Image (cartoon, rainbow, N blue to C red; front, side, top):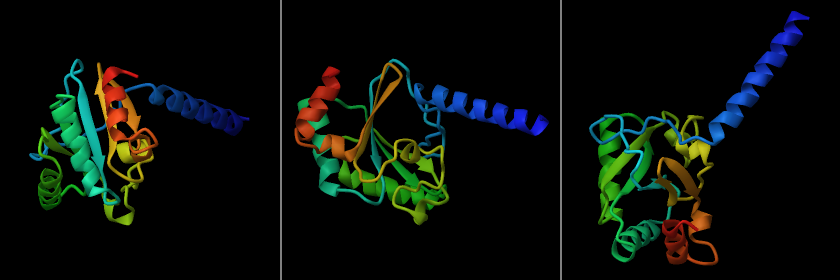
Length: 172
């Protein structure tokens, strides 16, 4: 009887954790180039462009240019998934700065399994795993501390990335 009750309690805790975790802003450590935990202001609007190895280089430039030039946004960050080495961060930063003219900063998520898959989904707490990121760029738009995720398919769907980004900024 004790084993059966333990199983039910574990199942209940897992269900409560899954339900409670979906509505909140991810509280995952995202790091700066200097290996400090990135601190965001809860009242600020952020455009976190997620980048993995399976990506469209021209698309990063399009998103960067349109957000800055047409929508006059400058809180553009690139989040790369890397192992935790200094070399990996520096190389990812160099690559991101080639793709973005108006990049505020390159941010990093650490994943020791980054080489095992395109998304580096070896870390179950990764943004890339949480949002099931396959192809990038994808966008995590945070406004008033509320995240909204848009996959590559969402951004480059039938209406096109310009219409989608305009709608995101307008709140539609």
